[in-house]
Length: 185
Length: 213
Image 1 (cartoon, each protein chain N blue to C red):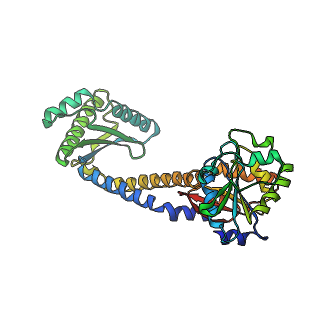
Image 2: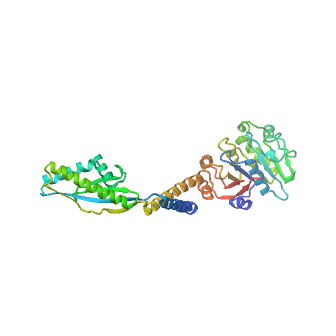
Image 3: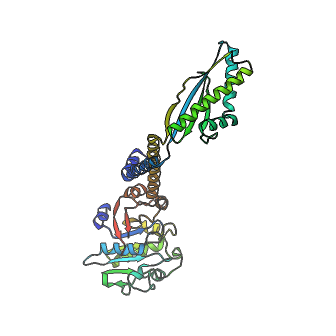
């Protein structure tokens, strides 16, 4: 899969955004496993959780919910990832930092403009977990600056109508997904 | 749906139509073997006007239609029961009129050929004698040639019709299989259960699979 994604992308992949059409895809597990697939021997892969409504990546890494993305965005400083490391699996994890909050309060085009490069300076590759596209536009914001945009589909759980709706949302933002990944049990 | 989608549907779910047709065909065949047989005996009575003009022809037709409409009368049923010793009712006997050939057809239905034949024969004879008497009283008999055409009724087993039953079973099974295939195809498409359905919904290629731990 990693080779397929790299081949489908014209440029070297530094940032990947995993989008889901709705909440039928368990994106925390998917991003975690995607991170394992992209895990390098030398440089770390950072998994960042931008779903502040339903955060879940920190649970996979056995980390606290905060501090996380929200705190660092508020501070507008260089992220300190020392406390956000899932060393057992060789992955860095940036938790969402809060739950049940509207991420658009502090996550916008401007903040992504400085925060995304700052994160990429900390790791060879950043994989973003985003809220479902039918619930929040954060995924679209992040996809705009990502090297690879993956649409996660869970056969048997994701409805075609939701996928089409997600396609329309991306098309309206002028974003073309790099490819689709199937999330299966 | 495009032709390629129809062919894909056939390849994926075509077995349902074959299986449905086979199962329903076999059921119909089994049903035919246990179904009670029904025999039909048919006697014909011609009713031709003595003089072939339009007035007589219309009069003959009118008389024949009237006779058929009131068939079988209680009197006829009682006479048939008395002569054959068989219990009979209006459902076992039927009459029809052929306007073209000027023939009254009397049909009798029974579970065996001999009974049906006896009923038809007796009913035809009784009908003929009763109507002859009536036409005589009404002074019509000299203008109408009224006679039984076949003394021995034509016998035919009308049920169970194995060929019709099996063909109907095959058709119903095939249609049910087709309906089920379309429902399953709709489910596949709606819930993206096949790779083709996924690729049709998202223009980008499927790059891989992530297994949930």
